[in-house]
Image 1: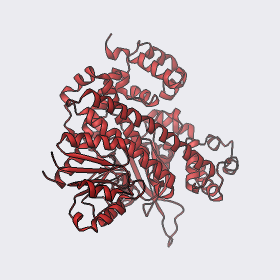
Image 2 (image 1 turned 60 degrees about the horizontal axis):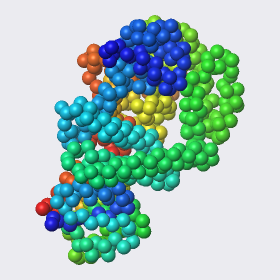
Image 3 (image 1 turned 30 degrees about the vertical axis):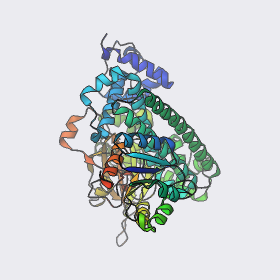
Image 4 (image 1 turned 90 degrees about the horizontal axis):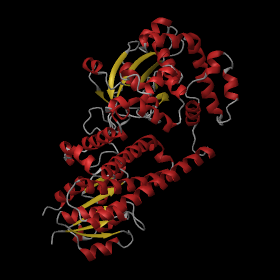
Length: 122
Length: 437
């Protein structure tokens, strides 16, 4: 089985599409749709890479990422942030929170694949 | 009968579809109804500028009228492929794809058209995002749905083997998303209508722009002297704010002044005779070129010039008047693209500037741009000369290859925030349309 990717995204059809093309590329894909218990799910799934939406029910992706980076075991985890907003301040917030890469919606599948392969080389 | 010999039939069908009478289309296209009748019965061939004029009125690509919808579909798919060259779509098998899977091809083309429409909506509304949290939430929802459609359509379009149950599932997802998109769009329109009714976020400038657009920027009673500026403004309940009425009065006084200098009937006659080159028209009236640009942009549709956009700015570059085109939107706040000839004209007052410009929209459009900067208001020795630049924008006829030989297109955008040109020396801030950090 390939490396593990956890997708935290509240739009189920986006999750399904990402799950399909990443699985086909050899990744083991897990998905979660809520923000408030995201840290517990990350700890449970132990992913090699995290794809994290910014606007989630319960808690924003920025908050989740800030808390995650405070835990020593997750400081190096590659995190790809997804958001519908792409202004400079959003990029800054993502960088400050500890994102490895930031991508605005709508993205193409090849952009995601390329980013995932770069962030967590097999 | 060949494809192109049925052009007239397609024009008639399209005219019925958009609810125009034959006489109305003929007038808008600048020909007689009897001639249009011959064209519609395929007894006269049509091409060149008349075809472009009719296709513009009917809001359809000329190729669809000449060659039918199938060519339109293939063109759309070709544009979709060109927009994402990295996907390496098999262009050499495009005809085969559209022929063997017409349903999927139509779905892909439709998804692309929806994305284009949404991107244009985002462009037009981006200025308001920071002022309206409901609008921001609605657009966020729409972008999420578009993302889902794009991603799912991307999987289906790649052409790899996909199991039937996954195909069914993705087809269902696209259907769900399309429905959701329709619902969100409808809710957004309702919200914007409600906002308009409440005037809660309307600025004086927005009220004035709505009023101008509702009048198609043309005020016949002022041209004919049947109404005064005050009468027109007093009869406009939609101008609710004192500031809106003041701005409108100032604008209409200038409009009336320009109309007296360049009267409507002689202007229509000259445009019909010599075309719409603003410097040529200006010579006929001995009027400033900037006045002619404004007069041309506010002529009625019956002048047959097609859609014309206009933007004016003061010496700081701040827009002071805007008449946007659907294909060439103009930012409501802040300056536009620094590469517009409008700004080039500011550095060389009184010298007319002509450029072909190419928009940064996914489906790049070319326009003729006529710009000039001239003194605005009275001049006096020792006083400050106020300079204003004016730019007229006109969609370029697709067949006008000679113009392009002489004037290579200048790539421009609307404004940096919504411009997708990644490498541009004139960029002053990042774009929301490019994605990588």
